[in-house]
Every structure is written in structure tokens, then in C-alpha cells.
Image 1 (tube, rainbow, N blue to C red):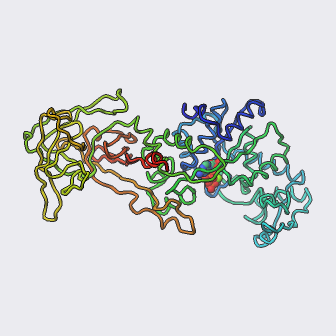
Image 2: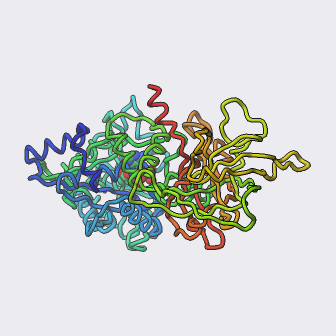
Image 3: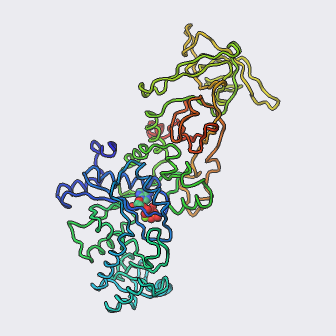
Length: 564
Ligand code: ATP
Ligand code: MG
């Protein structure tokens, strides 16, 4: 993963600076152990990619290790389908967790013992306030909470009740185990937070073994400590939970320098995108998209299907950097990163989105002729291929105008253009049907312009792509646009579903040069002058299907150059 390790000539972000300091001072004995802790309750999205690049990146840069740990402490929403997709996506993104695959649920017994230990130390108690009472006791920002009657239970009573909670003697919700901290704390998270609750739900890995489950704020620091994690990175919303993270470890006797430390960084947000798992799940469940891997989704599986290279996502994460400032990244920057990657890797091919028939009047009937076409001008090693020239061709309808405005250099009646890798052709006549639609162009070609220039020095300004009617193949081309019509969907009290873009997927039947018919799913090419396209898994030999990965026009670059 050279580009992840290559952080050397850029200035270090605050997290990398901190880790470098720790390495220098020998804080963790020179060890760096990080973890990426997804909850298996959805598919990973590009926001997770930022965390993955940081967690795995910092470990790799410091000869450390990064654990993939499933934070599967909430049985009602978790599933092995999600687990599998997450493992797959992390690997696809280019990171190797090797043998370091862990599950929070495998620590349930140890966590239970930790809870018992807290009770023994007088630091946890069983509370059986009802839901309504709970609200009254909690207080609010300005008012301290009140102490629950359970707070004065003896250690013996608490041990007895907690054991019976585990043994299933009480209803769901009848009681909870709470940390005994400070009901007057200005930080609500520290007002005797719940650390265990009763929940009869089948766990996808442990079945019905447990009916009590630990809460995230209790479980997470323990998971980190059990695994010997040194640096625990999470997003900013956990900043106010950090005192509790530290309290749990302190109370159980985990001491520096050998215990994990939590550091927060800002999330990745993208314009025109929703990133909340709940909303993504809703899009899938309510069929607003075709699934988690719909190419319009910000999920890693959707992006992969769309043809976005993992390297482009890593590049974006590098460009965005790691800070404590919340912000929203322009999705145009992601598109820029995709083009930067694909420009060097994707072979060039010819295709037309909206075929318009062209007959070359002075080309012999039935005649065909091979023409050389360069595979990738950015990569001489990519070589060249043959295209077939013939009397009947297709060009893109968008490259012809009956009445061209000033500055239009493509085809029009009486005008001449260059066919890419071919000849100059001139439009002699446009055939128009009863509805006024152009159905065919009758053209002539100049045999002396083979290879794209005229011996008499005459110039043409336009070059357009084309395919031969003899051997081109029809294909389904899925043209994607942004999934939402507004930059920040779902804000200002608006339902994000009302902001879905009805034109986010437009399907056209285009025509492709024949070499494109046999590509396997996942292959990305550039359709010259149109965009980057990737073969979809729906493709068959008879019916090729391509996803438009991204268009060629780089609005981010343009804006940068304009100094905006
Ligand atoms: P939720 O907890 O609401 O289900 P989540 O997005 O926090 O959703 P997790 O599976 O808990 O999902 O996330 C795993 C890790 O990825 C966490 O450390 C989390 O902080 C990080 N992460 C999630 N979303 C983003 C984001 N948009 N940018 C950066 N990191 C993120
Ligand atoms: Mg989370």
C-alpha cells in the first residue's frame, strides 16, 4: 500500500504527530496497535473508508498492527451478511487484517466479569427505575440528576441481582446495571450511565446464550484493553464519551502507559450524499435503490460496482486529511480523484451513447478496412488495436446539429470533421423523418486524410468518435447522476427521501466497438470523449451492460484553476 505509507513529504496530521511523539518517548514500548471496529449492522460506506485508511495506515506506517474487530454488542440489528461484506470491503480497499480478526461478542464472559468486579468495588449497581422515573431522575443540562434508590444497594444485593439478570429471571427492561459515577456531573454521559441491559434477542454468533448485553461505552474500552490496543481512533461525537472510556479503564485498574487511549477526529461527509447507516438501510429496504451495491450508493460495494477504484478512495482520504474540524467535502473532489486514477489505468475505447447512422456515399459497398487506434495515450505500453472502417457507421447524435451555433465545430450540413483514428468526413445531407427527427446522415470521406490529417494542409477543428455498423455491438449503458438533488440531503428538517434525484439513473442503448463486448465484469475503460465506464455484473455476451463510473468533465479541477 505504497500510497498509504507515503505520508512522508506531506506534513503529519495531528494523530500521526501524536503517534510519532509516542514512538519517540517510548510510551507503549514502541508498539502501535490500532483497530477498526465496525458494527455489523450495515454495509461499509466511504466514511468508514476514512477510518480504515487512518487505522490501518497509522499501524502500517509504524510497523504496528491493526485489528478488524466486529463491535457486535447489539444483537437486534446485526447479521452475518454484514460481517461478510465488511471483511470483503476492507480487503478490497487494500488492507490486510491477517489473523487479527476479532469479535466483541467473544469477550462477553470477560466483560461480565469486569462488571462483577465493578460491583465488588462499589462502582456499579442494579437500578430498577421505570422508564418514566428514569426521565425524572436524569435531570438535564442545567439541573443535576437525582440518585436512584438502587444506588444504595449493598454489594451483595447487587451481585445477586446481576447474576439473576444474567440467568434470565427478569423481563427485558425490568432493570439495568449502572456505573456509579456522579449524578451531578455536567456531562450527562457520566450520570451513572447504563452499562448492561436485559435484551432477549438472538445474537447472530452466540444464539440465545446471553440475555444481557453490555452497552457500547462500557464494552468498547474493554475490547481495546483486552486486545492491547494502544491508539483508539474514533469520530468526534465520541469526544464527550471519552471521560467514561477512561473511567471504565481506571476503575478496573488499567493504568498508563500500557492502556489504550482514545483520540477523536472528524467524520467524512460528502455533498449530495447521505452517510448515516440508518438512512442507507432505508434506501435499500424501501427500494429507492436496487440494493446495498447499487452504483449510486456511497457504500464501498456500490462504489466498487460502479467501477470506482479503491486507489481513488484512498487518494480522497489522503487529500481530505485528518483533523478535528467538522466539514463536508465536495463530492466533485471524489470525482476528481477517480479521474486521476482512471486516466492512467483505463484503456481508451470508442462508443456512442445515442447512435446516429452515417452512410459514407463514396466508400465501396461491403468494403471494410482496419485502422490503428491507440489504447492509452497516457501509457505507451498499452499498445494499439484495430478498428473497422466501413461504409455504414454510427456517430453520437450529440455530435451533429442541423443549425450549429457559433463555435460549434462538430458535424453539420456542409461541415467536415475528423473521425477519431480515421478520416475526415463531410456531411452532404441529413435525412429527416416526418417528425423532423434526423434519422441518418449522408456523408463523403476524403481518402487522403487517413490517419487524421489532410495533405493539402486544410484543418478541421472537431474530432468525434464513431463505431462501424458492421461489427459494433449494442449495449445497455447506465448513466448515473447524483442520488440527491441538494448538497445536504435531510437537513433543515426536510425528509431526505423527498430530495432523491429522479434522474439519478438513466439507461440508454448505445453502440460499442466490438472489443468491448467480451470484457469481464469490473473492467473499466474510457469511452473517448464520454467518460469512464465499467462492466456491470449484469452483463452477458448477448447483452453487455456498463455503468458510467464518472464523466470526463472535471468540475473540481476547473474550480481550483479559477481560484475558487
Ligand atoms: P452507527 O454507530 O450509527 O451504526 P457508524 O457509522 O458509527 O454508525 P460503525 O460501524 O460504528 O458505524 O463505524 C465503525 C467506525 O467507523 C467507527 O470508528 C466510526 O467512528 C467510523 N466512521 C463511521 N462513519 C464515519 C465517517 N463518516 N467518517 C469517518 N469515520 C467514520
Ligand atoms: Mg458507531
